[in-house]
Picture 1 (cartoon, rainbow, N blue to C red):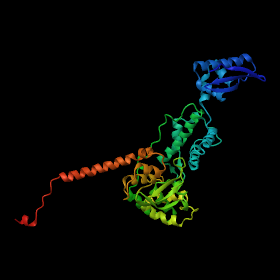
Picture 2 (tube, rainbow, N blue to C red; picture 1 turned 120 degrees about the vertical axis):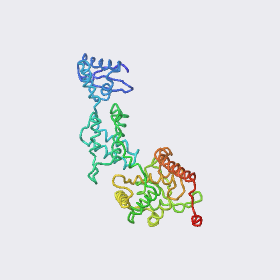
Picture 3 (cartoon, helix red, strand yellow; picture 1 turned 180 degrees about the horizontal axis):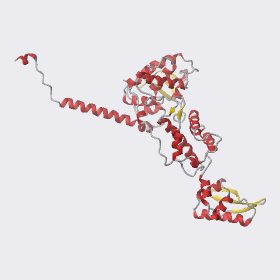
Picture 4 (spheres, rainbow, N blue to C red; picture 1 turned 90 degrees about the horizontal axis):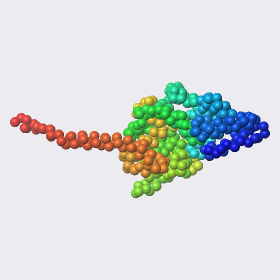
Length: 401
């Protein structure tokens, strides 16, 4: 740190402070040169001894007046100043964070982050960082209610709210707004492991077949048969349909996905044959500039929820979301359970919109493990059958003798 420079501006003494590469002009709040020098000396001593660092940064940032720092230094009450330095009103910074996210994430994701964080930090009301205690965050998560059912939200939704708050606080730490990640030691909300499952192909078809004919049914078949995200499905127009494309000796159908994955790059995805039979009528009827699946997100979600309950493949606790259809697709093409060829990790990553195969292998590797275990069980059963002595069969003639 460089030696502070004291100078006069009008009747008040000011000081130039350079600390950690930051150059600031700070008012001492006094016209007495002796008092001003005392404040500067207190700042210089603390900086040289590396004590009261959060308070030093708060003075540099203008959050704490140098006069208050110096007075507390000589009075021996630096604890109060440190508490002020470590306590920040987070409310004004939420809007800054949301502006920072513009262009970096999908607009729908940005709106979801806004709603989730604002449920804890409402606009216009001061919310200080020292209020982010473990009990306070836990009470906030416990208080979340599903507006459609008037019941507590699922463990997955709780995790999404927590992740949004954690993303905001990590950004605040990077920007120097808060001195440390407040949620660093907070126990991450556990996911309900009963929901970490996929529907096997017969169950998946039973649920999809239970949907009434219409655009939501075709959209859900398209998601399950391509692995596309719901937002991308709803952006598909007639001009995005690819029919009878020759690939590796086979004729396949597909469509262009305009989604939020992999840097917003468009991608060509192929549709499984059983799903294309439901999609084709809507694809053929759509004009080039018209949406193929002309239905809202709520229609699609409601149709998928009701279909699982009607087909009795899940209940309210274990039902899958529309996003989980992507998981079903990935596992299905990995194992080939729908009777069509198996596909490798790179194909799955391209279909899902991931830039690399790392995420695919990390998320879906445990499904392949369960598949191997089933195969081992089948082999053990076959080995036991072959090792068993043949059953003694007596013919009727031999029995009479």
